[in-house]
Length: 433
Image (cartoon, rainbow, N blue to C red; front, side):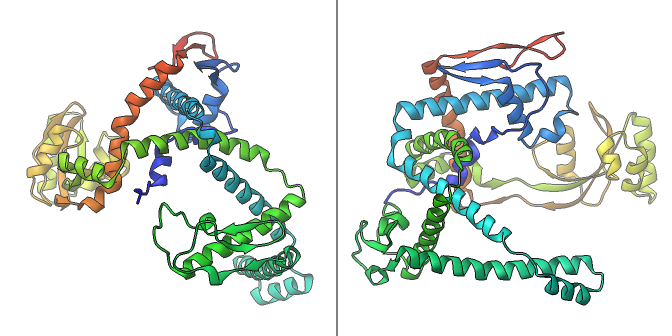
């Protein structure tokens, strides 16, 4: 039995989804930033990637160096996506049955959602029913909105059920639930109609289920698949066009499939994960965490004076809100949250490690100023089991294997990094960091 690959983990490692239609203004005209074989990455695509990233709302407030760094990182991610696409095409993954089935399933999902959305749009609250709702709610706008939503939801369920029954009758759908039993073959037909048929292998992956799963679960998957195919067929007859979204998905899916393929090679069995865990037991260690309060000022003299006031009974947090030169700390009245032992400024980490909870520290000097600390509470160091860190181990193995693999692809496909012209024409920046 093959080891099951966590597709969510794989998706977290792919970057093709950074592409989007929106853009951030940065470069005067679209330019080619990188060439990867016959493929390219343009400045328009880079701007779109930044606009669709979690950093988009912060980008304008970043300084020039941080913006350039983010652009360089995004560009490398887009180039990586192109490299994975080219390698997938070289290996013929774009012609594989798994890929074609994946694309077809996505298409079916798109037309299904389009059809059902249109079905829901047909439902309106009748005037007399709406008037009755308004009378009952007596000016309660939220209550009225909830009542309308409940009405539409109930009517949608009824309309959906009626629509499905009509489509099943039109297609002369026949179920063969009696065939769901031990010894069932992958090509056993479980549901069929004029326009489709569903085999056991269409709903149960034999590579993941060497024995017959729960029959009720199989029936549930069968009904879902039948509903999907019936609705999609009806949508196709209406000429629903999802080609734009489908093309975008194809562009994203191929590099992800390439990475999934490599991951199965890098993590060929559960033993691979166990062996890595045995060599790196520290991965299961959860360091001590400390809830820290801090006050930081510019001079030792001021810090000593404030410490004396705290020892006499004043609150470090109240004083931090008044005097701290750390903007965020001052805004939060000195509560800087939970810090992980071993991280952050070494001077502060060492001091908090030996500081008794609830006490104020001596004055600690760092490059940021002169600090007073207190530890509100701690969570002691602990260890997770292998099962608790399994996904993280897989992630770390991918992190080890991916950079050299991309380096090999970069040499194979001869990546060229270009210099781009800034919008104000006053400087040029090389986006390759």
